[in-house]
Image (cartoon, rainbow, N blue to C red; front, side, top):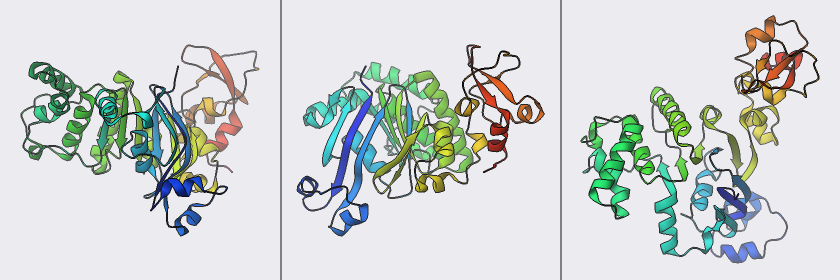
Length: 338
């Protein structure tokens, strides 16, 4: 089965004649060399795949290329070089009409600015993309009410945006993007304008929605804690390139570059690393008192400190013993030993 999204050797150059410049490019010039030649590498030779039902979080500092990459994946930007396929379909080959249809039927988008229509109620804001799609009034009202309930805004259907808090406005934006039942959901720093408490609540809500809906999600953030809470995998970007794309525990345990290492050095590894991430093949004859494979070392701290065994069996959700944990290795991660 095709990946939900496949991007191969994608470039997005900004400048006077980007296609010609890319065609004449020699070797692998640095971001600075490209800049000196009068171009900006918004996206620089990125190859990445997103699985169906996966939440891929793209992160990096301001100007690293996060938003540009997502705009390329949804073809809000035309790419300078490379290829992007959505469910096996080359989106660069689509006509404008086909592209509009793809976005209307398959892609949902939520941005940092809520973009709500101030003169429309919550219900009418959420129903708006369905109205644009030509759905009849009864059907779009029914669907809008369904997703309003899903995001926890039942009872506020007739409110106007000005009567809602920031968190509630963002929920309307999320409901609006869900109304079209997208297969793929692009979210560009959707919670960054919210205060920390509401942001945390929205993350919880978002995880609840994902558990129910199982969407394919590409989520942008510059907040590493947010990425760790939400991601199946994290792609760390710098100067238009993806420095590393991996699971959260592998990103913090085995940073691929010095940039990624610095990016993650303040993270409490024990909060991220699971037993499964550092277990070894199972060789123990006994499987008594195992620990859960998906438990973090922080969650296992009491067991690790109090258990005298050198190796501890690791158990999958179905009860199968899948490996063993070297207690000392786990303690070293837990207490930050080098």
